[in-house]
Amino acid sequence: MIDVINDIGETRRRMTEDRTAGRSIGLVPTMGALHDGHLSLIERARSENDRVVVSIFVNPTQYDDPADLERYPRTLAADVERAEGVGADLIFHPSPEDIYHDAYRYRVTESEFSRRLEGAHRKGHFDGVLTVVLKLLNIVGADRAYFGEKDWQQLQLVRDMAAAFFLPTHIVACRIIREVDGLAMSSRNIHLTDDQRKLAPELHRTLASKWSADEMTRHLASTGFEVDYVERRDGRVLGAVRLGKVRLIDNVQI
Ligand code: PAF
Image 1 (cartoon, protein in one colour):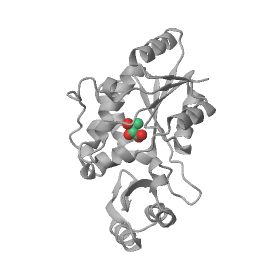
Image 2 (cartoon, rainbow, N blue to C red):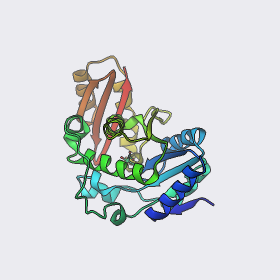
Image 3 (tube, rainbow, N blue to C red):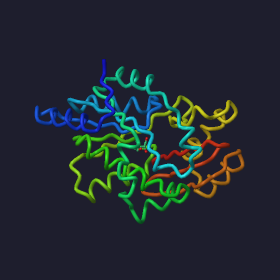
Image 4 (spheres, protein in one colour):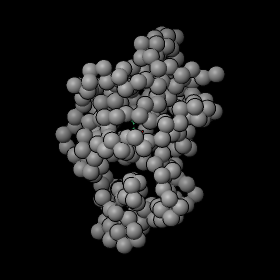
């Protein structure tokens, strides 16, 4: 049976033991509600490391909307089973009080790219993400940490932070896992109504089209999405939309 550890000191002790024994460590940071996209990250970590740690922590500081934080699905028992099924060795499930024992007085702020795209629509979001990722990387001391390309901006910022602070962990980018109709897998998808779920793959179809960003925005708006942004950047087209209360993001390589 896989170990679920809440205690930060105990997790560090286990990780030191592994490192001392010469075992490599892969970390998959998650907020739980694991879907096949997360499982593919765990599988990749399994194939490249001796030990695979999955962190499950719904990070309060990356939410600017308390209702959104409240809505995030908490499914620990099912998550543990799914993670174990694809070869995770340990679940790290700390409490917010332990992670933020400093009451979030210390935080990581990136002052340029984090203010654009997602950051322009979710105030303080990337401060929360970068701060918790730095804490997790410091606690686990992984050789490699795995992030999905669906959260493309997050991936770039985490990579840049690792470089900026000379972190020893290698940040590994993993491709987007999609449903058969093209919708990028996300823990938020379960909140879509049947009608919204039918419409949702149109985001991917549109971003993969040959249209300009303006044409994509107009098309998405005319089919029923509220569009936060569609933007071309670094050889990708990135988009974020809302369907009712559910916010969807996706990106496609041009
Ligand atoms: O991508 C996520 O699930 C979260 O932003 C992360 C990286 C686990 C930090 O809370």
